[in-house]
Image 1 (cartoon, one colour):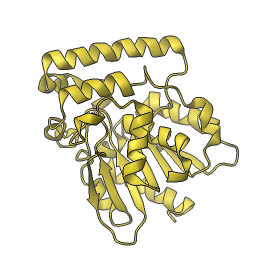
Image 2 (cartoon, helix red, strand yellow):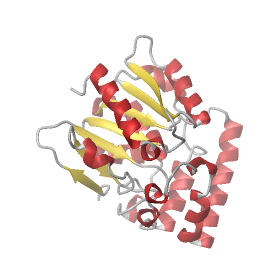
Image 3 (cartoon, rainbow, N blue to C red):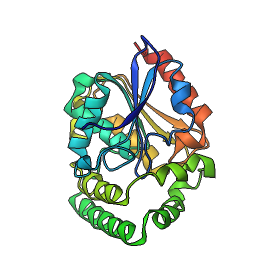
Image 4 (cartoon, rainbow, N blue to C red):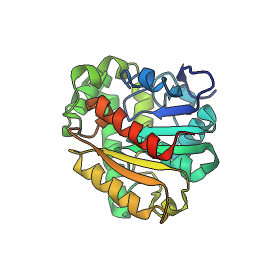
Length: 258
C-alpha cells in the first residue's frame, strides 16, 4: 500500500506535491493547497508515520520515505517543509528524474558532524519515549509551545488535524527519519540540476543560515534562489501565507513552472 494523499485537481496542469513537517499531515496546509490549485494539480501526501498512511510504512527511514513520496507524486514539482523538506531533498538526490522543481521551506540537508548526529539521535529517542508515555495530546501541547512555533495562530497550528496522527507512527518517524539518523546530503547538493528555491522565515535565523549555506553548495550557474519570507518564523508558509505565495509567484515568473 502506498502513501495516503489528497488531490486538488486541475486538469492539464503540472503536478505539485506538498510534503508536511513532523506531527503534521496533508491536511495541515491551511488554504494553500486550494490556492496553489489555481496553477497546479496539487497532491498533499501523508508522510510515513503520519495521517492516514498505513502503519506498514512506519518503519520507513528517510530514503524509503523519499521513495514512497516519489512513487505517489511521480514526475512533478515538490515542495517540502522541515521534515518534509528533507524527504523532498532526499528524493531530488536519489531520483532527480522525478523532481522538475524543488522548493524547500525551513529545511536542512542534515547534520554533517557525527557527534551532533549522535546527540540529536539520543534527543529524538527521548522525545519518542515521552510521546509514547504521555500520549499525543500532552505531547502536542509541549511541541507546539516550542519557540520554533511561536508565530503560529491556533488555527494555523491545526491541532485537531495533528491529533489524527498515531503516536506509534510519530515515534517511529522521530527514530527513523530524524536528523540524528539521516545520512547528511551536503556533499550531494552539487549534483542537483533542477531549479531550486530555498525558503526560510526572516525570523528563523537557524534555517535562514542553512538555506544560505545550501545555496553555496549548489553548482555554479545553477538555477537556485534563496529567499526570506518577511515577518515569519519557522512555519513561514502558515504564518505569512500571502507573502509566502507572493515569493513563490515571483520565483515561478523567473524560473518558469513549465
